[in-house]
Length: 151
Image 1 (tube, rainbow, N blue to C red):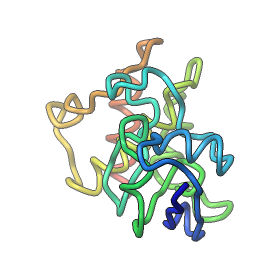
Image 2: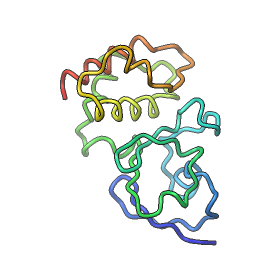
Image 3: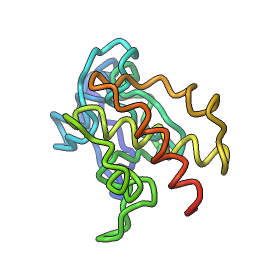
Image 4: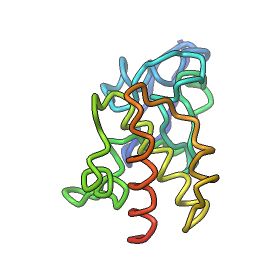
């Protein structure tokens, strides 16, 4: 099998895998990075949302070969040591999580949004397509607004 070398959360890694293996399984099964969650495998729920070179992507539908030479950040790499990212802090302050399953993907999508726009409108926040089965969308919106004010 071919090898693919890329960076995950600041650490260079090499994965021996078929080119078409979804990046989600390379992250979770081969590297032990379990923050990105499997929800659907077809880019609908977006529970696996992570970043590639600072932009949101969904590893459930991205072949591991596409990660070659890129920087991947998952929820595990978002904080700076013990210092949470402002979006993570806002999530806690707004008590967003209910079951918590979708939260890593929700947070990563929110960080990507705030990188694109410093003060997102409700319409821009609504463009985030990550599914929350518990329906905490109001708290998600409030957390994004709170994080935006701090960033």
